[in-house]
Amino acid sequence: MRLKLPPAPSYYNASSPPSLEPARARLAGVYEADVAVVGGGLAGCSAALHLAKRGFKVALLEANFVGFGASGRSGGQTIFGLATSQKALALQVGREDAKRLFEMSIEALDLSQALIREFAIDCDYRPNHVHVATKPRHLQELADWYDELRDDYAYESVQLLDREHVQAHVRSARYLGGLIDTRSGHLHPLKFTQGLGRAAESAGAVIFEQTQALRYDDVAGAGVTVHCAHGEVRCRQLVLCGNAYIGALAPALSRRILGVGTYIIATRPLEAGLARSLLPSNAAIADINWILDYFRRSADERILFGGRVSYSALQPPQLAESMRRRMVRIFPDLAHVPVEYVWGGYLDITMSRAPDFGRLSPNVFYLQGFSGHGMSLTVLAGQLVAQAVAGTAERFDVFSRLPHRDFPGGALLRRPSLVLAMLYYRLKDWL
Image (tube, rainbow, N blue to C red):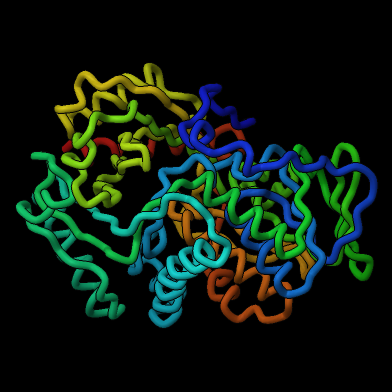
């Protein structure tokens, strides 16, 4: 099924200065490179940047524009850990590698902030993220998570919050407590992605936009040729970062991920003091339901609120109004505040919700499956694949040891079967 995006523009597009993004050429003719990177999201831009910094001649191919996909549409929350639990990771790769994966997720937060500073990326970064409890059992889950992070992983940037102290971050009667992480945070994802694209260009990478990679030839001893509508890139190595949009370019990868629709609304700018009264510390907030709500303040004092998902690849009906109702349930003071933007995108999930990094051949690497937890991990992934291309793959291979399998049901039944499975988790949230 071909993924279709809602036609409405996002708040991120409307608030990204077009003057910062000069028009980039479409690939025409033959281009010679050391490495081709497919996909102009965070993973692709980071890979191009770190490869170029190592002296490789890099061509990045983007079917639309840099930041078009999930990287430029997301909730913008930079969070520690992976989308799956540490316990699940330990069962898959052992306790020591699970610990290394967690430590690299923290490194990803630090790397993102270091790149923001190094390249002066104006992306409205703000620190602090709070996971909040909406029901009593969540309080115990957060307490157990806190103990695991502190005792098993020596992660000391988290703190439990009771009902009174969570109000310092989110003024809502809905929340019973929370877990704050001062190392995580939030940012403007499109500005961040485009900033990484400009950083890659400053390091020497060449970016071709409106250039979809249609197929590639990988001939042992002869290198890789990536074919596009109006030209081709001849290179020694290829890095695939198409994620939910990889499609027919790499069917073996496409079968292992599923594009899940996720949606966000943005209110109009709130009157003086209202946004700050609702979110006093300017932290990003997310509950811990399976189908979660997440929200934060924007730089111009809007509330950005996400929470609906679609496993069917169809946009939910009356999307803006249903999401507005969810937001008002949390913040009754917003009952009469209009919604100015509603948009969506597709994140790429794996069966295990663990990221899927690896090789399709000695010359073809890939990064995918961030499962909604990639705003900073993608940046580290680009650095890791650049190291692997250069011949130092030890850290990359910790991720590549994670086992992955195709979604069941084939092309016709994989989505319907997943929709039915998600009904079970929705019921758990409701109960």
